[in-house]
Length: 596
Image (cartoon, rainbow, N blue to C red; front, side, top):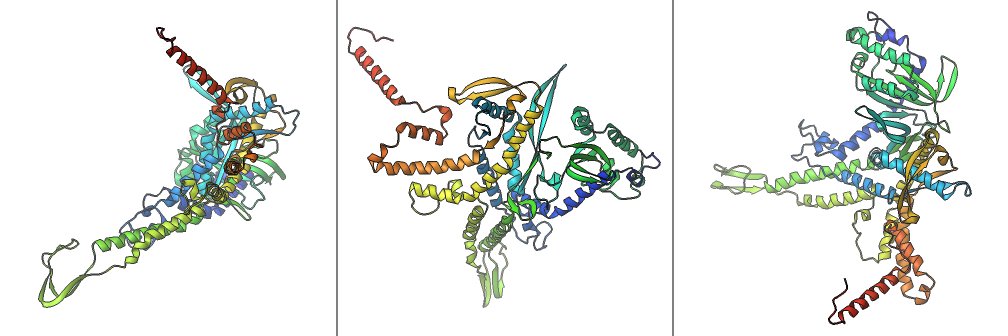
Protein backbone atom coordinates (compact mmCIF):
# COMPACT_ATOMS: atom_id res chain seq x y z
CA UNK A 1 0.00 0.00 0.00
CA UNK A 2 1.20 3.49 -0.84
CA UNK A 3 2.56 5.55 2.03
CA UNK A 4 1.11 8.87 3.18
CA UNK A 5 3.58 10.80 1.03
CA UNK A 6 2.84 8.78 -2.12
CA UNK A 7 -0.92 8.19 -1.67
CA UNK A 8 -2.28 9.16 -5.08
CA UNK A 9 -4.79 7.47 -7.31
CA UNK A 10 -1.98 6.86 -9.77
CA UNK A 11 0.07 4.98 -7.17
CA UNK A 12 -2.88 2.89 -6.04
CA UNK A 13 -3.86 2.07 -9.64
CA UNK A 14 -0.48 0.38 -10.11
CA UNK A 15 -1.65 -2.29 -7.66
CA UNK A 16 -5.05 -2.69 -9.33
CA UNK A 17 -5.74 -6.27 -10.52
CA UNK A 18 -6.83 -6.74 -14.12
CA UNK A 19 -10.09 -8.39 -13.03
CA UNK A 20 -11.06 -5.33 -10.98
CA UNK A 21 -10.35 -3.08 -13.97
CA UNK A 22 -12.32 -5.35 -16.32
CA UNK A 23 -15.38 -5.56 -14.07
CA UNK A 24 -15.35 -1.81 -13.40
CA UNK A 25 -15.12 -1.15 -17.14
CA UNK A 26 -18.08 -3.45 -17.84
CA UNK A 27 -20.15 -1.79 -15.11
CA UNK A 28 -19.49 1.65 -16.59
CA UNK A 29 -20.25 0.45 -20.14
CA UNK A 30 -23.52 -1.31 -19.30
CA UNK A 31 -24.72 1.51 -17.05
CA UNK A 32 -24.03 4.02 -19.80
CA UNK A 33 -26.05 1.92 -22.25
CA UNK A 34 -28.98 2.07 -19.80
CA UNK A 35 -29.19 5.85 -19.51
CA UNK A 36 -32.13 6.07 -21.90
CA UNK A 37 -34.12 3.62 -19.76
CA UNK A 38 -33.22 5.52 -16.59
CA UNK A 39 -34.50 8.76 -18.13
CA UNK A 40 -37.85 7.06 -18.90
CA UNK A 41 -38.03 5.63 -15.38
CA UNK A 42 -37.47 9.05 -13.88
CA UNK A 43 -40.15 10.69 -16.03
CA UNK A 44 -42.69 7.94 -15.28
CA UNK A 45 -41.94 8.09 -11.55
CA UNK A 46 -42.35 11.87 -11.52
CA UNK A 47 -45.80 11.59 -13.10
CA UNK A 48 -46.95 8.79 -10.77
CA UNK A 49 -45.94 10.66 -7.59
CA UNK A 50 -46.46 14.25 -8.76
CA UNK A 51 -48.74 16.67 -6.91
CA UNK A 52 -48.55 19.45 -9.52
CA UNK A 53 -47.37 19.92 -13.10
CA UNK A 54 -44.30 21.77 -11.83
CA UNK A 55 -42.89 18.35 -10.88
CA UNK A 56 -43.35 16.89 -14.37
CA UNK A 57 -42.32 17.62 -17.94
CA UNK A 58 -45.56 19.59 -18.31
CA UNK A 59 -43.82 22.35 -16.40
CA UNK A 60 -40.84 22.46 -18.77
CA UNK A 61 -42.63 24.07 -21.73
CA UNK A 62 -42.59 27.69 -22.75
CA UNK A 63 -39.79 29.03 -20.58
CA UNK A 64 -41.93 32.00 -19.49
CA UNK A 65 -41.52 31.88 -15.73
CA UNK A 66 -38.89 29.93 -13.75
CA UNK A 67 -41.54 28.97 -11.19
CA UNK A 68 -44.25 28.20 -13.76
CA UNK A 69 -42.59 27.53 -17.08
CA UNK A 70 -45.74 26.18 -18.70
CA UNK A 71 -47.16 29.69 -19.03
CA UNK A 72 -50.43 28.70 -17.30
CA UNK A 73 -51.88 30.34 -14.24
CA UNK A 74 -52.70 26.85 -12.88
CA UNK A 75 -50.54 23.79 -12.21
CA UNK A 76 -53.18 21.09 -11.70
CA UNK A 77 -52.02 17.51 -12.17
CA UNK A 78 -54.73 14.91 -12.88
CA UNK A 79 -53.19 11.69 -11.47
CA UNK A 80 -54.64 9.29 -14.03
CA UNK A 81 -51.30 7.53 -14.42
CA UNK A 82 -51.21 7.04 -10.64
CA UNK A 83 -54.69 5.53 -10.65
CA UNK A 84 -53.76 3.09 -13.43
CA UNK A 85 -50.59 2.13 -11.56
CA UNK A 86 -52.47 1.46 -8.30
CA UNK A 87 -55.21 -0.45 -10.15
CA UNK A 88 -52.68 -2.69 -11.90
CA UNK A 89 -50.87 -3.49 -8.64
CA UNK A 90 -54.14 -4.33 -6.83
CA UNK A 91 -55.35 -6.63 -9.60
CA UNK A 92 -51.96 -8.27 -10.11
CA UNK A 93 -51.65 -9.05 -6.42
CA UNK A 94 -55.17 -10.44 -6.18
CA UNK A 95 -54.58 -12.64 -9.23
CA UNK A 96 -51.27 -14.01 -7.87
CA UNK A 97 -52.57 -14.78 -4.38
CA UNK A 98 -56.29 -15.54 -4.73
CA UNK A 99 -56.13 -18.04 -1.84
CA UNK A 100 -53.63 -19.59 0.58
CA UNK A 101 -52.94 -22.60 -1.63
CA UNK A 102 -51.61 -20.55 -4.54
CA UNK A 103 -48.81 -23.00 -5.35
CA UNK A 104 -48.39 -26.77 -5.27
CA UNK A 105 -45.67 -29.38 -5.67
CA UNK A 106 -45.74 -31.45 -8.86
CA UNK A 107 -43.81 -34.72 -8.54
CA UNK A 108 -42.02 -36.33 -11.47
CA UNK A 109 -42.16 -39.81 -9.95
CA UNK A 110 -45.74 -40.60 -9.01
CA UNK A 111 -44.88 -43.63 -6.88
CA UNK A 112 -41.91 -42.11 -5.01
CA UNK A 113 -43.51 -38.72 -4.38
CA UNK A 114 -46.21 -39.53 -1.88
CA UNK A 115 -48.89 -37.20 -0.58
CA UNK A 116 -46.99 -36.71 2.70
CA UNK A 117 -43.81 -35.70 0.86
CA UNK A 118 -45.69 -33.22 -1.31
CA UNK A 119 -47.33 -31.78 1.78
CA UNK A 120 -43.95 -31.46 3.50
CA UNK A 121 -42.42 -29.51 0.59
CA UNK A 122 -45.43 -27.21 0.27
CA UNK A 123 -45.72 -26.62 4.01
CA UNK A 124 -41.99 -25.92 4.27
CA UNK A 125 -42.27 -23.01 1.83
CA UNK A 126 -45.52 -21.74 3.33
CA UNK A 127 -43.91 -21.64 6.77
CA UNK A 128 -40.85 -19.80 5.45
CA UNK A 129 -43.03 -17.35 3.51
CA UNK A 130 -45.00 -16.53 6.64
CA UNK A 131 -41.80 -15.89 8.61
CA UNK A 132 -39.84 -13.93 5.97
CA UNK A 133 -42.74 -11.76 4.66
CA UNK A 134 -42.57 -13.26 1.18
CA UNK A 135 -45.78 -11.67 -0.07
CA UNK A 136 -44.62 -8.19 1.01
CA UNK A 137 -41.42 -8.64 -1.01
CA UNK A 138 -43.43 -9.80 -4.03
CA UNK A 139 -45.55 -6.66 -3.70
CA UNK A 140 -42.38 -4.54 -3.89
CA UNK A 141 -41.35 -6.50 -6.99
CA UNK A 142 -44.78 -5.93 -8.54
CA UNK A 143 -44.33 -2.20 -7.94
CA UNK A 144 -41.03 -2.32 -9.85
CA UNK A 145 -42.60 -4.40 -12.60
CA UNK A 146 -45.44 -1.95 -13.16
CA UNK A 147 -43.40 1.24 -12.67
CA UNK A 148 -40.12 0.40 -14.42
CA UNK A 149 -41.20 -2.55 -16.58
CA UNK A 150 -38.44 -4.61 -14.92
CA UNK A 151 -38.06 -6.30 -11.55
CA UNK A 152 -35.13 -8.24 -10.11
CA UNK A 153 -34.81 -10.55 -7.12
CA UNK A 154 -32.13 -12.69 -5.53
CA UNK A 155 -32.79 -15.82 -3.46
CA UNK A 156 -30.33 -16.50 -0.64
CA UNK A 157 -30.18 -18.76 2.42
CA UNK A 158 -29.76 -16.82 5.65
CA UNK A 159 -29.57 -17.29 9.39
CA UNK A 160 -30.82 -14.22 11.25
CA UNK A 161 -29.73 -13.75 14.83
CA UNK A 162 -31.46 -11.66 17.48
CA UNK A 163 -29.72 -10.38 20.58
CA UNK A 164 -31.17 -9.89 24.02
CA UNK A 165 -29.49 -9.36 27.38
CA UNK A 166 -26.83 -12.08 27.69
CA UNK A 167 -28.68 -14.13 25.07
CA UNK A 168 -28.35 -14.64 21.33
CA UNK A 169 -30.95 -16.74 19.59
CA UNK A 170 -31.81 -17.65 16.02
CA UNK A 171 -34.70 -15.58 14.73
CA UNK A 172 -34.99 -17.14 11.27
CA UNK A 173 -33.14 -19.74 9.23
CA UNK A 174 -34.07 -20.49 5.66
CA UNK A 175 -34.38 -19.12 2.13
CA UNK A 176 -34.99 -15.40 1.67
CA UNK A 177 -36.12 -13.48 -1.43
CA UNK A 178 -34.51 -10.05 -1.68
CA UNK A 179 -35.49 -7.27 -4.04
CA UNK A 180 -32.79 -5.76 -6.24
CA UNK A 181 -33.47 -2.20 -7.36
CA UNK A 182 -33.38 -1.84 -11.17
CA UNK A 183 -30.97 1.05 -10.58
CA UNK A 184 -28.50 -1.25 -8.79
CA UNK A 185 -28.05 -3.95 -11.43
CA UNK A 186 -26.49 -3.86 -14.90
CA UNK A 187 -25.97 -6.65 -17.41
CA UNK A 188 -25.32 -7.32 -21.07
CA UNK A 189 -28.67 -6.37 -22.64
CA UNK A 190 -27.84 -8.17 -25.89
CA UNK A 191 -27.32 -11.59 -24.27
CA UNK A 192 -29.44 -14.55 -25.31
CA UNK A 193 -31.22 -14.68 -21.95
CA UNK A 194 -30.97 -13.00 -18.57
CA UNK A 195 -30.02 -16.30 -16.96
CA UNK A 196 -26.94 -16.60 -19.18
CA UNK A 197 -26.11 -12.88 -19.25
CA UNK A 198 -23.16 -11.72 -17.12
CA UNK A 199 -24.45 -9.26 -14.55
CA UNK A 200 -23.13 -6.85 -11.94
CA UNK A 201 -24.94 -5.75 -8.77
CA UNK A 202 -23.79 -2.54 -7.11
CA UNK A 203 -24.31 -1.90 -3.41
CA UNK A 204 -23.22 0.90 -1.09
CA UNK A 205 -22.47 0.21 2.58
CA UNK A 206 -21.10 2.29 5.38
CA UNK A 207 -17.69 1.20 6.60
CA UNK A 208 -19.31 -0.23 9.73
CA UNK A 209 -21.83 -2.24 7.72
CA UNK A 210 -19.08 -3.53 5.46
CA UNK A 211 -16.89 -4.73 8.34
CA UNK A 212 -19.88 -6.33 10.06
CA UNK A 213 -20.75 -8.20 6.85
CA UNK A 214 -17.16 -9.49 6.69
CA UNK A 215 -17.36 -10.60 10.32
CA UNK A 216 -20.82 -12.21 10.34
CA UNK A 217 -20.82 -13.81 6.87
CA UNK A 218 -17.72 -16.00 6.65
CA UNK A 219 -19.39 -18.04 3.89
CA UNK A 220 -18.77 -15.16 1.48
CA UNK A 221 -15.05 -16.07 1.50
CA UNK A 222 -13.85 -12.46 1.52
CA UNK A 223 -10.07 -11.99 1.29
CA UNK A 224 -8.91 -10.66 4.67
CA UNK A 225 -5.82 -9.02 3.15
CA UNK A 226 -8.07 -6.97 0.86
CA UNK A 227 -10.23 -5.95 3.82
CA UNK A 228 -7.05 -4.70 5.48
CA UNK A 229 -6.18 -2.67 2.36
CA UNK A 230 -9.65 -1.09 2.36
CA UNK A 231 -9.21 0.04 5.97
CA UNK A 232 -5.63 1.21 5.45
CA UNK A 233 -6.53 3.27 2.37
CA UNK A 234 -9.18 5.19 4.31
CA UNK A 235 -6.99 5.71 7.37
CA UNK A 236 -4.22 7.15 5.19
CA UNK A 237 -6.61 9.24 3.06
CA UNK A 238 -7.97 11.13 6.08
CA UNK A 239 -4.47 12.50 6.72
CA UNK A 240 -3.77 13.48 3.10
CA UNK A 241 -5.05 16.43 1.07
CA UNK A 242 -7.67 15.94 -1.64
CA UNK A 243 -5.43 17.46 -4.30
CA UNK A 244 -2.62 15.05 -3.44
CA UNK A 245 -4.97 12.06 -3.51
CA UNK A 246 -6.51 12.90 -6.90
CA UNK A 247 -3.23 13.27 -8.79
CA UNK A 248 -2.78 11.04 -11.80
CA UNK A 249 -5.52 9.03 -13.51
CA UNK A 250 -9.06 10.19 -12.74
CA UNK A 251 -11.62 7.74 -11.36
CA UNK A 252 -15.22 8.77 -10.57
CA UNK A 253 -17.85 7.05 -8.46
CA UNK A 254 -21.62 7.30 -8.92
CA UNK A 255 -22.96 9.83 -6.43
CA UNK A 256 -19.55 10.86 -5.10
CA UNK A 257 -17.51 12.45 -7.88
CA UNK A 258 -13.73 12.26 -7.43
CA UNK A 259 -11.84 9.47 -5.71
CA UNK A 260 -10.93 11.70 -2.75
CA UNK A 261 -14.62 12.53 -2.16
CA UNK A 262 -15.53 8.86 -2.27
CA UNK A 263 -12.65 7.57 -0.12
CA UNK A 264 -13.40 10.16 2.59
CA UNK A 265 -17.18 9.67 2.52
CA UNK A 266 -17.22 6.77 4.97
CA UNK A 267 -18.93 4.51 2.44
CA UNK A 268 -17.77 1.42 0.55
CA UNK A 269 -18.86 0.56 -2.99
CA UNK A 270 -19.16 -3.15 -3.77
CA UNK A 271 -19.56 -4.59 -7.28
CA UNK A 272 -20.63 -8.25 -7.38
CA UNK A 273 -20.04 -9.83 -10.80
CA UNK A 274 -21.87 -13.06 -11.76
CA UNK A 275 -21.10 -15.09 -14.87
CA UNK A 276 -18.18 -15.97 -17.15
CA UNK A 277 -15.16 -13.71 -17.54
CA UNK A 278 -11.70 -13.92 -19.12
CA UNK A 279 -8.80 -13.48 -16.71
CA UNK A 280 -6.05 -11.98 -18.88
CA UNK A 281 -3.45 -12.14 -16.11
CA UNK A 282 -3.83 -15.91 -15.67
CA UNK A 283 -4.79 -16.54 -19.29
CA UNK A 284 -7.88 -18.60 -18.44
CA UNK A 285 -11.65 -18.44 -18.73
CA UNK A 286 -13.43 -18.26 -15.38
CA UNK A 287 -16.84 -19.95 -15.71
CA UNK A 288 -19.84 -19.48 -13.43
CA UNK A 289 -18.00 -17.19 -11.06
CA UNK A 290 -19.02 -14.65 -8.45
CA UNK A 291 -16.32 -11.97 -8.22
CA UNK A 292 -16.57 -9.12 -5.73
CA UNK A 293 -14.73 -5.84 -6.40
CA UNK A 294 -14.49 -3.21 -3.68
CA UNK A 295 -13.58 0.46 -4.25
CA UNK A 296 -13.26 -0.43 -7.97
CA UNK A 297 -9.65 -1.25 -7.07
CA UNK A 298 -9.47 -4.55 -5.18
CA UNK A 299 -10.79 -8.07 -5.81
CA UNK A 300 -12.43 -9.07 -2.52
CA UNK A 301 -13.68 -12.51 -3.56
CA UNK A 302 -13.43 -14.98 -6.44
CA UNK A 303 -15.40 -18.21 -6.14
CA UNK A 304 -17.70 -20.51 -8.08
CA UNK A 305 -21.45 -20.02 -7.99
CA UNK A 306 -22.76 -22.80 -5.77
CA UNK A 307 -26.00 -23.81 -7.43
CA UNK A 308 -27.07 -26.98 -9.24
CA UNK A 309 -26.93 -25.34 -12.69
CA UNK A 310 -23.98 -23.04 -11.99
CA UNK A 311 -26.13 -19.93 -12.46
CA UNK A 312 -26.75 -17.30 -9.82
CA UNK A 313 -30.14 -17.27 -8.11
CA UNK A 314 -30.87 -13.84 -9.57
CA UNK A 315 -34.05 -13.55 -11.61
CA UNK A 316 -35.64 -10.93 -13.85
CA UNK A 317 -39.11 -10.25 -15.25
CA UNK A 318 -39.90 -7.71 -17.98
CA UNK A 319 -43.43 -6.41 -18.55
CA UNK A 320 -43.14 -6.00 -22.31
CA UNK A 321 -40.22 -7.74 -23.96
CA UNK A 322 -38.14 -5.91 -26.52
CA UNK A 323 -36.58 -7.62 -29.55
CA UNK A 324 -32.83 -8.13 -29.06
CA UNK A 325 -32.87 -6.29 -25.73
CA UNK A 326 -33.33 -7.82 -22.28
CA UNK A 327 -34.51 -4.55 -20.70
CA UNK A 328 -38.31 -4.64 -20.60
CA UNK A 329 -40.76 -1.83 -21.26
CA UNK A 330 -43.29 -0.79 -18.61
CA UNK A 331 -47.09 -0.56 -18.95
CA UNK A 332 -47.02 3.19 -18.24
CA UNK A 333 -44.25 4.17 -20.66
CA UNK A 334 -46.55 4.59 -23.67
CA UNK A 335 -49.04 6.63 -21.64
CA UNK A 336 -46.76 9.50 -20.62
CA UNK A 337 -47.70 11.54 -23.70
CA UNK A 338 -51.42 11.12 -23.01
CA UNK A 339 -50.94 12.13 -19.36
CA UNK A 340 -49.04 15.19 -20.61
CA UNK A 341 -51.94 16.12 -22.89
CA UNK A 342 -54.53 15.62 -20.14
CA UNK A 343 -52.65 17.99 -17.84
CA UNK A 344 -52.18 20.48 -20.68
CA UNK A 345 -55.89 20.57 -21.53
CA UNK A 346 -56.97 20.69 -17.88
CA UNK A 347 -54.83 23.73 -17.11
CA UNK A 348 -55.67 25.44 -20.40
CA UNK A 349 -59.37 24.95 -19.57
CA UNK A 350 -58.86 26.44 -16.10
CA UNK A 351 -57.24 29.52 -17.63
CA UNK A 352 -60.09 29.82 -20.14
CA UNK A 353 -62.68 29.58 -17.35
CA UNK A 354 -60.85 32.32 -15.47
CA UNK A 355 -61.13 34.40 -18.62
CA UNK A 356 -64.90 33.77 -18.70
CA UNK A 357 -65.30 34.69 -15.05
CA UNK A 358 -63.20 37.84 -15.38
CA UNK A 359 -63.42 38.72 -19.07
CA UNK A 360 -61.23 41.20 -20.87
CA UNK A 361 -62.90 44.61 -21.25
CA UNK A 362 -63.13 46.35 -24.61
CA UNK A 363 -63.40 50.11 -24.33
CA UNK A 364 -64.15 52.14 -27.47
CA UNK A 365 -64.05 55.92 -27.64
CA UNK A 366 -64.02 58.44 -24.83
CA UNK A 367 -65.06 56.54 -21.67
CA UNK A 368 -64.61 57.64 -18.06
CA UNK A 369 -63.41 54.57 -16.06
CA UNK A 370 -62.81 56.40 -12.80
CA UNK A 371 -64.19 54.54 -9.80
CA UNK A 372 -64.25 51.16 -11.60
CA UNK A 373 -62.22 48.49 -9.82
CA UNK A 374 -60.35 46.29 -12.27
CA UNK A 375 -61.08 42.60 -12.11
CA UNK A 376 -64.39 42.93 -10.23
CA UNK A 377 -67.88 42.52 -11.68
CA UNK A 378 -70.17 45.48 -11.99
CA UNK A 379 -69.02 49.07 -11.83
CA UNK A 380 -70.12 52.27 -13.55
CA UNK A 381 -68.75 53.63 -16.83
CA UNK A 382 -69.58 57.12 -18.04
CA UNK A 383 -69.48 57.65 -21.80
CA UNK A 384 -68.47 61.22 -22.45
CA UNK A 385 -70.19 63.00 -25.27
CA UNK A 386 -72.23 59.93 -26.20
CA UNK A 387 -69.42 58.55 -28.34
CA UNK A 388 -67.99 55.29 -27.00
CA UNK A 389 -68.86 51.81 -25.75
CA UNK A 390 -67.81 49.21 -23.20
CA UNK A 391 -68.01 45.44 -23.77
CA UNK A 392 -66.42 42.10 -22.98
CA UNK A 393 -64.16 40.04 -25.21
CA UNK A 394 -66.22 36.90 -25.78
CA UNK A 395 -64.19 33.69 -25.15
CA UNK A 396 -64.39 30.61 -27.35
CA UNK A 397 -66.96 28.33 -25.66
CA UNK A 398 -65.52 25.18 -27.30
CA UNK A 399 -63.15 25.04 -24.34
CA UNK A 400 -66.07 23.53 -22.40
CA UNK A 401 -65.58 20.30 -24.37
CA UNK A 402 -62.24 19.67 -22.65
CA UNK A 403 -63.83 17.57 -19.90
CA UNK A 404 -65.36 15.25 -22.50
CA UNK A 405 -62.04 15.01 -24.37
CA UNK A 406 -60.11 14.24 -21.20
CA UNK A 407 -62.65 11.59 -20.14
CA UNK A 408 -62.15 9.82 -23.47
CA UNK A 409 -58.37 9.93 -23.12
CA UNK A 410 -58.44 8.58 -19.57
CA UNK A 411 -60.68 5.68 -20.61
CA UNK A 412 -58.35 4.91 -23.50
CA UNK A 413 -55.31 4.99 -21.17
CA UNK A 414 -56.98 2.40 -18.94
CA UNK A 415 -57.46 0.04 -21.87
CA UNK A 416 -53.97 0.59 -23.28
CA UNK A 417 -52.41 -0.31 -19.93
CA UNK A 418 -54.08 -3.72 -20.08
CA UNK A 419 -56.38 -3.02 -17.14
CA UNK A 420 -60.02 -3.39 -18.34
CA UNK A 421 -62.56 -1.02 -16.86
CA UNK A 422 -64.67 -3.99 -15.84
CA UNK A 423 -62.00 -4.74 -13.23
CA UNK A 424 -62.93 -1.48 -11.47
CA UNK A 425 -66.62 -2.39 -11.39
CA UNK A 426 -67.56 -0.04 -14.25
CA UNK A 427 -69.94 -1.73 -16.65
CA UNK A 428 -69.83 -0.93 -20.34
CA UNK A 429 -73.02 0.58 -21.83
CA UNK A 430 -75.89 -1.58 -23.06
CA UNK A 431 -78.19 -4.21 -21.61
CA UNK A 432 -76.58 -7.63 -21.29
CA UNK A 433 -77.37 -11.00 -19.81
CA UNK A 434 -75.25 -12.33 -16.97
CA UNK A 435 -73.48 -14.70 -19.37
CA UNK A 436 -72.74 -11.88 -21.81
CA UNK A 437 -71.23 -9.79 -19.02
CA UNK A 438 -68.95 -12.65 -17.98
CA UNK A 439 -67.95 -13.34 -21.58
CA UNK A 440 -67.06 -9.69 -22.13
CA UNK A 441 -65.07 -9.59 -18.90
CA UNK A 442 -63.08 -12.66 -19.88
CA UNK A 443 -62.34 -11.25 -23.34
CA UNK A 444 -61.44 -7.78 -22.04
CA UNK A 445 -59.04 -9.16 -19.43
CA UNK A 446 -57.06 -11.42 -21.73
CA UNK A 447 -54.21 -8.94 -22.01
CA UNK A 448 -54.13 -8.54 -18.23
CA UNK A 449 -54.28 -12.31 -17.73
CA UNK A 450 -51.52 -12.88 -20.26
CA UNK A 451 -49.19 -10.48 -18.45
CA UNK A 452 -49.78 -11.85 -14.95
CA UNK A 453 -49.49 -15.47 -16.16
CA UNK A 454 -46.20 -14.56 -17.83
CA UNK A 455 -44.98 -13.00 -14.58
CA UNK A 456 -46.04 -16.06 -12.64
CA UNK A 457 -44.45 -18.67 -14.92
CA UNK A 458 -41.19 -16.85 -15.73
CA UNK A 459 -40.48 -15.18 -12.38
CA UNK A 460 -42.46 -16.45 -9.38
CA UNK A 461 -41.90 -20.05 -10.52
CA UNK A 462 -38.12 -19.55 -10.45
CA UNK A 463 -38.19 -17.85 -7.04
CA UNK A 464 -40.11 -20.72 -5.47
CA UNK A 465 -37.92 -23.48 -6.87
CA UNK A 466 -34.74 -21.60 -5.93
CA UNK A 467 -36.06 -21.40 -2.35
CA UNK A 468 -36.75 -25.13 -2.31
CA UNK A 469 -33.32 -25.91 -3.77
CA UNK A 470 -31.57 -23.85 -1.10
CA UNK A 471 -33.61 -25.60 1.57
CA UNK A 472 -32.47 -28.96 0.23
CA UNK A 473 -28.84 -27.81 0.14
CA UNK A 474 -28.39 -25.87 3.38
CA UNK A 475 -30.96 -27.21 5.84
CA UNK A 476 -28.79 -28.27 8.77
CA UNK A 477 -30.27 -30.89 11.04
CA UNK A 478 -34.00 -30.48 11.53
CA UNK A 479 -36.59 -27.77 11.04
CA UNK A 480 -40.10 -27.42 12.44
CA UNK A 481 -42.90 -26.46 10.08
CA UNK A 482 -46.63 -25.95 10.43
CA UNK A 483 -48.92 -28.16 8.35
CA UNK A 484 -52.62 -27.44 7.87
CA UNK A 485 -54.44 -30.65 7.03
CA UNK A 486 -57.47 -29.79 4.89
CA UNK A 487 -58.64 -33.40 5.02
CA UNK A 488 -59.12 -33.19 8.78
CA UNK A 489 -61.13 -29.97 8.92
CA UNK A 490 -58.11 -27.62 8.90
CA UNK A 491 -56.34 -29.12 11.91
CA UNK A 492 -52.90 -27.58 12.43
CA UNK A 493 -49.96 -29.79 13.29
CA UNK A 494 -46.23 -29.20 13.57
CA UNK A 495 -43.82 -31.56 11.86
CA UNK A 496 -40.06 -31.94 12.03
CA UNK A 497 -38.38 -32.32 8.66
CA UNK A 498 -34.83 -32.81 7.41
CA UNK A 499 -33.16 -32.03 4.10
CA UNK A 500 -33.90 -35.61 3.01
CA UNK A 501 -37.62 -34.83 3.19
CA UNK A 502 -37.07 -32.04 0.64
CA UNK A 503 -34.99 -34.15 -1.75
CA UNK A 504 -37.87 -35.30 -3.91
CA UNK A 505 -38.07 -35.35 -7.66
CA UNK A 506 -40.33 -32.55 -8.80
CA UNK A 507 -40.88 -28.80 -8.72
CA UNK A 508 -43.05 -26.12 -7.16
CA UNK A 509 -45.59 -24.63 -9.57
CA UNK A 510 -47.47 -21.37 -8.82
CA UNK A 511 -51.09 -21.68 -9.85
CA UNK A 512 -52.60 -18.49 -8.43
CA UNK A 513 -53.00 -16.50 -11.64
CA UNK A 514 -53.90 -19.52 -13.76
CA UNK A 515 -56.38 -20.69 -11.13
CA UNK A 516 -57.87 -17.19 -11.00
CA UNK A 517 -58.53 -17.14 -14.76
CA UNK A 518 -59.82 -20.71 -14.79
CA UNK A 519 -62.07 -19.99 -11.81
CA UNK A 520 -63.69 -17.01 -13.55
CA UNK A 521 -64.31 -19.10 -16.66
CA UNK A 522 -65.81 -21.99 -14.68
CA UNK A 523 -68.12 -19.69 -12.73
CA UNK A 524 -69.44 -18.20 -15.98
CA UNK A 525 -69.93 -21.67 -17.48
CA UNK A 526 -71.64 -22.95 -14.33
CA UNK A 527 -74.12 -20.08 -14.38
CA UNK A 528 -74.95 -20.82 -18.00
CA UNK A 529 -75.34 -24.53 -17.18
CA UNK A 530 -77.89 -23.76 -14.46
CA UNK A 531 -79.92 -21.59 -16.83
CA UNK A 532 -79.95 -24.25 -19.55
CA UNK A 533 -80.68 -27.14 -17.18
CA UNK A 534 -83.63 -25.29 -15.64
CA UNK A 535 -85.33 -25.33 -19.05
CA UNK A 536 -85.13 -29.14 -19.36
CA UNK A 537 -85.75 -31.21 -16.19
CA UNK A 538 -84.52 -34.36 -17.90
CA UNK A 539 -81.05 -32.87 -18.31
CA UNK A 540 -80.83 -32.05 -14.59
CA UNK A 541 -81.07 -35.76 -13.76
CA UNK A 542 -77.60 -36.32 -15.20
CA UNK A 543 -75.88 -33.77 -12.93
CA UNK A 544 -75.59 -35.05 -9.33
CA UNK A 545 -76.48 -32.36 -6.82
CA UNK A 546 -73.67 -33.32 -4.42
CA UNK A 547 -71.02 -32.82 -7.05
CA UNK A 548 -72.51 -29.50 -8.12
CA UNK A 549 -72.58 -28.32 -4.49
CA UNK A 550 -68.93 -29.36 -4.02
CA UNK A 551 -68.01 -27.53 -7.24
CA UNK A 552 -69.65 -24.31 -6.03
CA UNK A 553 -67.76 -24.51 -2.73
CA UNK A 554 -64.42 -24.81 -4.52
CA UNK A 555 -65.13 -22.14 -7.17
CA UNK A 556 -66.30 -19.61 -4.61
CA UNK A 557 -63.27 -20.25 -2.39
CA UNK A 558 -65.32 -21.47 0.58
CA UNK A 559 -63.28 -24.62 1.26
CA UNK A 560 -61.88 -23.37 4.55
CA UNK A 561 -65.38 -22.61 5.88
CA UNK A 562 -66.38 -26.25 5.34
CA UNK A 563 -69.91 -25.35 4.28
CA UNK A 564 -70.29 -28.53 2.26
CA UNK A 565 -71.81 -31.39 4.28
CA UNK A 566 -73.52 -34.26 2.50
CA UNK A 567 -77.28 -33.90 3.04
CA UNK A 568 -76.57 -31.44 5.81
CA UNK A 569 -79.94 -29.74 5.43
CA UNK A 570 -81.75 -33.07 5.74
CA UNK A 571 -80.25 -33.63 9.19
CA UNK A 572 -80.87 -30.01 10.15
CA UNK A 573 -84.50 -30.27 9.05
CA UNK A 574 -84.95 -33.48 11.04
CA UNK A 575 -83.41 -31.88 14.11
CA UNK A 576 -85.66 -28.84 13.71
CA UNK A 577 -88.77 -31.04 13.51
CA UNK A 578 -87.77 -32.94 16.65
CA UNK A 579 -87.22 -29.73 18.60
CA UNK A 580 -90.53 -28.33 17.35
CA UNK A 581 -92.45 -31.45 18.42
CA UNK A 582 -90.77 -31.50 21.83
CA UNK A 583 -91.65 -27.84 22.39
CA UNK A 584 -95.26 -28.40 21.39
CA UNK A 585 -95.58 -31.39 23.73
CA UNK A 586 -94.20 -29.39 26.66
CA UNK A 587 -96.61 -26.54 25.98
CA UNK A 588 -99.56 -29.01 25.79
CA UNK A 589 -99.06 -30.44 29.31
CA UNK A 590 -100.88 -28.19 31.82
CA UNK A 591 -99.57 -27.95 35.36
CA UNK A 592 -96.07 -28.98 34.41
CA UNK A 593 -93.12 -26.70 34.19
CA UNK A 594 -91.14 -26.71 30.95
CA UNK A 595 -88.02 -28.82 31.05
CA UNK A 596 -84.89 -26.66 30.88
